[in-house]
Amino acid sequence: MNIKKITTTFLASGFTLLPTLLSAQQYFTNPIQASTLDGFLLQVLDVVILLGAIVVVFFLILAGFKYVTARGDEKQISSAHQTLTWTIVGGAIVLGARVIATAIQATVNELGI
Image 1 (cartoon, helix red, strand yellow):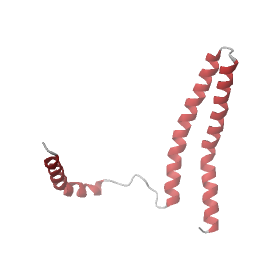
Image 2 (cartoon, one colour):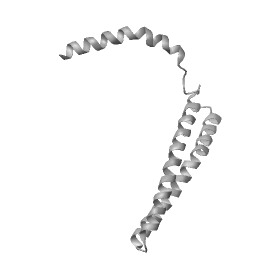
Image 3 (cartoon, rainbow, N blue to C red):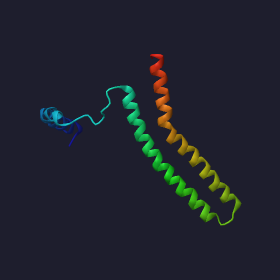
Image 4 (tube, one colour):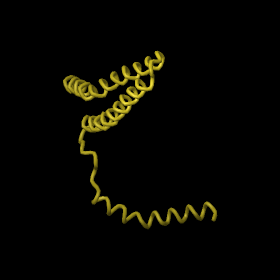
């Protein structure tokens, strides 16, 4: 089969399905229930916070694993301590992200931008 025949077949089948796809649009709803940019960004932030919390838990487990497997080696203990420290910093940022976003939103609304 050559590329021209494949393209023609693909386009023809797409055009025959177009009315069906357009009529199906009434059955689908917008999963994003935000009507403003602020609401949309806060919903995206909620997803990022959820994913960030999962990553924080993973790195806490990793830091604990590093501590257990260090067996007294100062270099490995230092690496585990650094992993734990930066995980706590990242967790604080993830937990504070919503507060920071709300403060920025209030400031922007107050300035009237």
